[in-house]
Length: 297
Image (tube, rainbow, N blue to C red):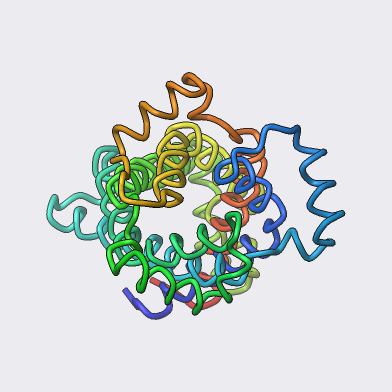
C-alpha cells in the first residue's frame, strides 16, 4: 500500500468537504460550545449581521488544518488495519467484526495524533477567542496559562467517541458496500468494470458508482453522528473549562444532564446532522475518487 498517496487522498477529501460545508460546521459549534438556544435561522442571521458572510468560515483554516491530517490518518489507518487483520486471519474479505475493530483502531490513532489542533480551534471560536491572536496566539496562551496537557483536554471522551465513530462509520459503509457488491447487479458491475479496464473515467471506476458512494457515505455518517454525539457535547464542554475546579468526563456528563436532562446531550444535533450527512457523502466520494486518480492500491 502506498502510504503517501493514501494520506493525500484522505487529506484532499477532508479539505474539499470541510471548506464546502464550513457554514454548517460554524452553526454546529454555536450550539455545542456556546450553548445557543435560538432556532437555526435566527442564529444564522445573527452571524451574517454581526460578522458578515465570512463569519460562516470563521475558524475554517484551522478546521481544515485539523481535519486534513485527521482524515488522512483515519482513512489510511483504517485500510491499513483492515488489511492487516485480513492477512492475520487469512481471509479474502473482512468480517463485520474485523471492520468494526479496524475502524475503532483508526479512530483512536487519528485522535491521539490530532486532538491538540481541535482543542485550539474550540478555544478560538469560543467567547473571547478573538483576543488570543489566532492559532499561534491561542497555542501560546494555553501552554503558558494552562500547561501542555491542556491541549489534550477531553482526551478520554475523544478516544471513546472516535473509537465508536470509526467503528460505526467504516463498519456501516463497508457492510453496505459489501452487501451491494454481492448482489447480481453488483457482481455484474464489477465484471463490466474489469472488462473495460482503463477505458472508463474515474467516476465510472467507482465500485459503487457515484450515487451509491454518496448515499452510503451519508448513511454511515448519520449512524455515526447519532451514536457519538453525546461524547462530542461532553468533550466540547471539557475543553471550555476554566479555573482549578475542573470536572472529569463522567462528572461533566452528569452535570450536563442535571442542567438540561438527556436532551442536553443532543443539543445541536439537527444542525450537526445537516452538516454531517453531506460531509460524510462528499468526503467518502472524494476519497474514493482520489484513490483512483492517484492509483492507490
